[in-house]
Image (cartoon, rainbow, N blue to C red; front, top):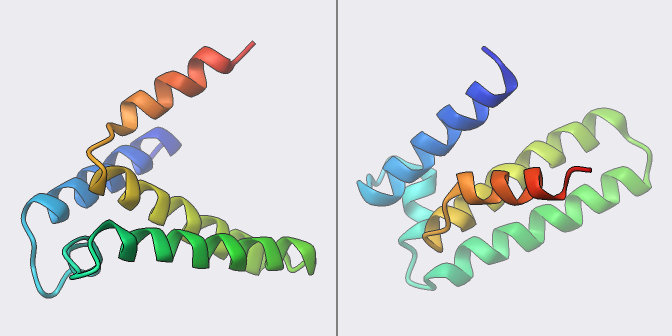
Length: 97
């Protein structure tokens, strides 16, 4: 599976779990929490801090894990805010020189 396919599949699952909540789904639970979008944003903040600490401490595997966690939670936040991931990718493409 290519890098792009992994992100596309992950995005598809996240959107589905936002639209079709299930008690068994972590994404559903945090996107439908009583705190609303704040719950998802708390997770983005938490994962950002953990990523920063892993990089600062030079722990390679932890940095990889925290980068994945942060990317995942950013994607959940985008879905919860009804922002299309394709629009983010297009913005990145525009910035490429």
